Every structure is written in structure tokens, then in C-alpha cells.
Amino acid sequence: MTNKFIPTDFKIPKALETDRFRLRMLTVNDVKKDYDAVITSIEHLHKTKPFGPNSKWPAKDLTYEADLIDLEWHQKEFQERSSFAYTIMNLNETECLGCLYIYPSNNPDYNAIIMMWVRQSKVADGLDKILFSSVKNWIKEKWPFDKVAYPGRDVSWDELE
Image (cartoon, rainbow, N blue to C red; front, side, top):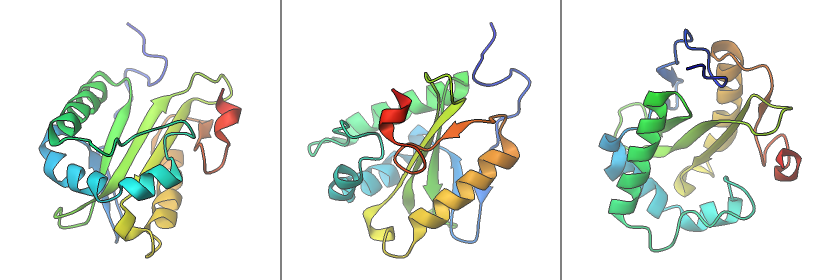
């Protein structure tokens, strides 16, 4: 079976590490830290809408179990190479700082759609801008995409429809 999103011989990057964070595959083992990051950032995520203007994620009543199911799904998709979810951790892995998602695009003008968010408590220290810049360079240097959309950042959500 051919995966048009990622070539079968492409080695998926395991991590991106900077002096501020480590980006690595999101797994079910991250649920405690991920849930904390999501639950403490609901207001911020509803305001910034990192998944589009119609997104209602995360629900205010998101449960730990529902988050675990989401992480299981993301981990399975990563293993199947159909999409890639990365957790963003501080360097000593004690706190989840956010997440990054790489999805295939349905729009023929783009190979991939990349969305990311940082926890509300890290917005004021400029982490979102640093993350975005670091990820753009990482994608350009390490991934096989030549046309990437960062919706809500460098393209509008309307452009992707």
C-alpha cells in the first residue's frame, strides 16, 4: 500500500529539541501531563482556536478518560504513519507545554497541515512564537513536504476549504 502523505522509506523524525523544549511522539504514557496542559488551558484554546474557527475542542467537561482515548488514537495514527502528533515537553519532561499535529492536506495546494498550541501559562513568555519558528525550520529541514500550511498562522482557515 502506498502512502501518498509520507514516502514508505522516509524515517519519521523522533524529536526536535531546543534550549526551551523537547518535541517528541505523543503517547498514552503522556496522558497525565497532557490532561493537565489541556484542562488548564481551556479558555486560551477556545479563544485561539488552534484547530479552526468552528472547533469546540476541548470540551469544558473533558475527562481524563476521554483525553486518554484521544492520545491512543493519535499514537495509533503515528504508528500507521497517517498523521503525526507530538507532545511539547519542558526539557526535564516534568511538564507538557502543548502539542503539535501534522496532518495530510485535502487541499491540493498543500502537502501537509500543521497545527500547534502551547499551554496558557506559557503564552506570556513567548513560547508560541519560538515554537512556531522552530517547527517551521524543522519541517523544512527534516520532512519531505514542499508545501505546508500553518492554518491560523500563515494561511487562513478559509484558504484550506
